Length: 216
Image (cartoon, rainbow, N blue to C red; front, side, top):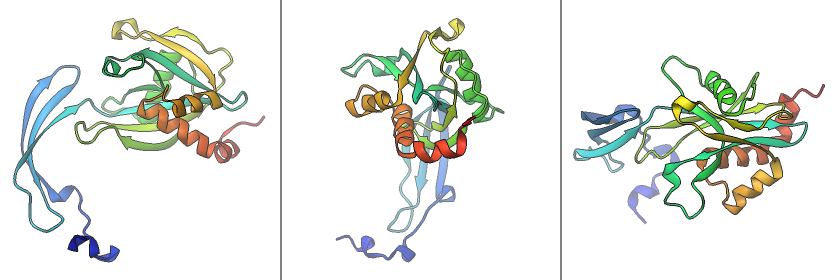
């Protein structure tokens, strides 16, 4: 066993942003998204500092996503659209996802998901509840997603939506909650935000319903 693993929890070292030094930042590409190369060093668990290392990061900003849930019918609203990043997967690159959008400067995450719900699904979200946030892939991108759930009326939801000027072609599905969760288990839904949100709903639906739905 490594001697450092023998430290008691009270002796463990905890590092934060102040324990990282960015020596240089070099732009590699700037379009709709950015890619930058960083030269940096950081403190080591064994003490001292690392040598200078270089890391290239894809920086697409931060995003917000929402799982619209109709508690009265026990259904969820999912959107389906083509994702080139899924071309290497065996299954179809048309993915079943959450409503989501990039958080622009000065925007609140909750307002983003309300706007995107209308654009992507024709769905009016009056209020939503923050679940958690997560890092998408911190080894290669700085992106963080704020995840929400919203109680909605899905009775008139469906069809094809999206903004033509943004190249969006989005089909909306209303799916029984149990079916959507089974799709997670089966691997039919395999994108992180949808998996996390549907797992959260499966674990918390009873307590969330008591405190957040309008039973009238």
